Amino acid sequence: MVRYFTKRLGLMLVALFLIILVTFVIMHAVPGGPFTSDRNLSEEVEAALNAKYHLDDPLPKQFFDYLKGLLHGDFGPSYKFTGKTVNDFISNGFPVSAKLGGITIIFVVLASIPMGILAAVKNGKWQDMLVMAVATIGVTIPSFVIASMLIYVFSFRMGVLPSFGLDSWKGYILPVITLGGYSVSYLARQMRSSLLEVMGQDYIRTARAKGLSEPKVIVKHALRNALIPVITVLGPTVANLLTGSFVVEKIFAVPGLGVHFVNSVSMRDYTTIMGVTVFYATFLLAMVFIVDVFYCLIDPRIKYD
Image 1 (cartoon, one colour):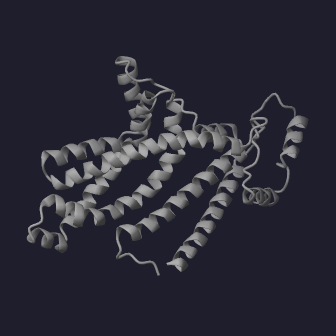
Image 2: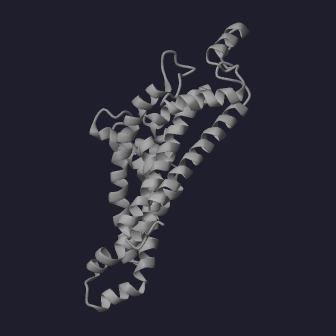
Image 3: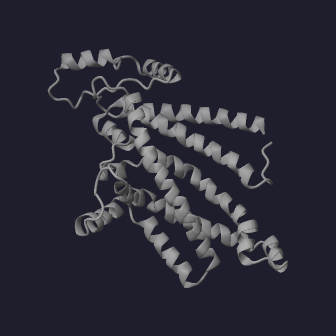
């Protein structure tokens, strides 16, 4: 097992290096630079700024200098916000996104798994059709459309929930529903299909033949195996929710990590684009690694050689 996880860590480092390289190349392949859009800058001032931030150095040198900074935990300064660093953006934005994402994860887990179980147990009945209808709507409708509908109904028409900000507990309701809507729908469908597959196995029929009640059959025998595909999807989902959604954060004026990423792309702030991308990629790879560990805890039959 130690050998397997050591190999996985090595592959994660290789994947992270490739992500950094591809992002760096694509970012610099776009014509222009961070200061090109500033029309008030003269050519001399722009050249001085490029020299200050070493943007006039050869690209290989810029890349390896950036890697050296990453090894020391330094994501570099922001090119567009004087006195700010990318570390500042991450340290200020990530806690906000993580808190919103953490609440959303609880909502997703508590809603999707029971919905999937109910749909599987009541397969073909009205409960199943209702859950699948809700799940289909949640998967197909974009988050910004859901956000607009929720704001219109609960903020403008009814006036019971705020349309922006996280100043009170009410401010979390609409962003959490919007952010978690797709994940709830997708995981509910995944839970249903996985549980239906498990319920058709021979050992489930044997458990029923022994006289076990249906709830015991589901909880003690079927649920554990049915959760494996769900956890596979849940790992990247947790990473996505904790690092924030730039669409949801922009609509509800949440000062999270996603807002900084959107601003950095529109302003061509190279270091912020790189920093947020590397931070997200590292978080995503870590969650995938944790999912592999949970496989062993959920299903003892899974062994890593």
